[in-house]
Length: 210
Image (cartoon, rainbow, N blue to C red):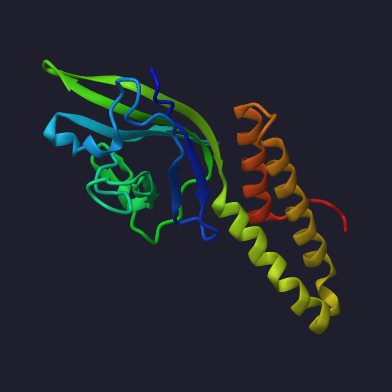
């Protein structure tokens, strides 16, 4: 096995798009397929797919397998730099029902992803190799926190009665930073609890007596 699948991930600041970029090594070596022979899943030859399971504070949703052919920068794939997949809510389906439109915010939570190269042999798909990864996706709370921070200069200049709001915005930002720093060491359940807490703070505020 010469092909080692890997991905880098960037979440757009507005929380509406997540981009997966192939950073694999070994395409087309050691008897493994090249990305140039990947075709649509329906052709029943070679396929490149992505499975997404989203864990949120309220539950777990397993979404339909995404056929990545046709979702890269170019089709067919001729160079590895074509393997960049920008996905929005209109491209993620649960039992054939889209998560939303291109304007829909993606769910905050822990995204478990499986990136796979598959081959149709006989009468069934087999997985040649895969990459399993868990990602912290938190575009919604990040956007909400930064929206509040952007108001702080206006408040400090125009309204002396906004002291509590200013302190609250700083508190939310500190909590957001703690989530970001914990993403590499905390367990899934702990991160989900932290996300839920920040979501609740942004809606209801804190009980701290500023």
